[in-house]
Length: 315
Image (cartoon, rainbow, N blue to C red; front, side, top):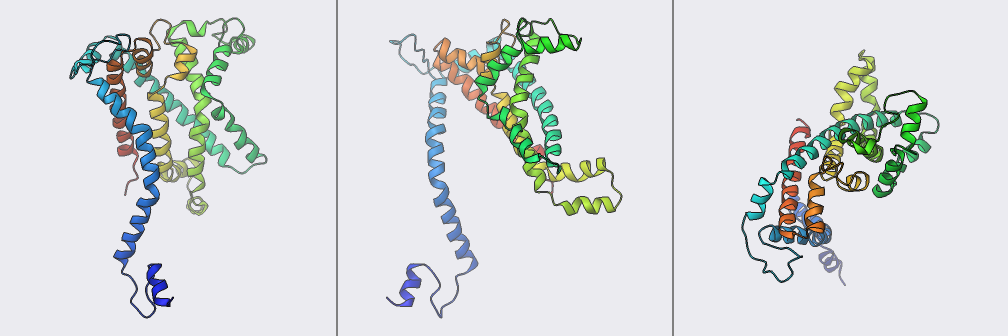
């Protein structure tokens, strides 16, 4: 086989010929990128696309599994109108947004402090970094059961420690009151998710060149000025990623609520995802549940878009 034919098969420029233009090379790279990404995209469409389309179809039909023989008639926007007029929906939406804002703010501040600490050089830093990941690695069901036991008013560790330190709350039935139940949920949620945010922010901190801080120190910048004018702006991409993931997780919170409070006391800790679970698995009303699911998707896209719009790097 000639050298020219081998080069043609390998799509290389023939010996003595002209090199391919930049446009041809970019097209080839783009096609290769599409080919490499295509299997993952197809898999994601199969895993997430079908349930989304199925829920969208349910939301426009009367689908109640307890009425097995009833026809699944097209009802248009009836399920959405029922959702908008339900007294539980605005209350659950307010509780969900409130939990999302409070938990994300507290956890991001705590995670940023933890990431800054882990970014410093000290003896045993590697072991501490590994230990920080333990709460995040624990399954949510296990951590929720753990914190439920710790907040138990009779045998819980929390009341015992508060009593020893003579602090308020030492004789509190945490999961029996609205605000104390939310406090317990926030503590358990922070213990679980602060390491996740901290690791993302730590990765962003390690990408910041050390020369930047040395130049600022030579110019006489204080530690606070360096943090505010250099660390935070340069950390913006990592912070945006962390906020998107954590905010959407907080907005869709369900498992920790289900395990620790069961939506109670009463309905004071019910979130939108909890209402969705009730519609699907308790009431078996897939039409109404589909409407809630699609609403959650719309809200999530809006929240993610807002974060990207606010946090995107400024040029």
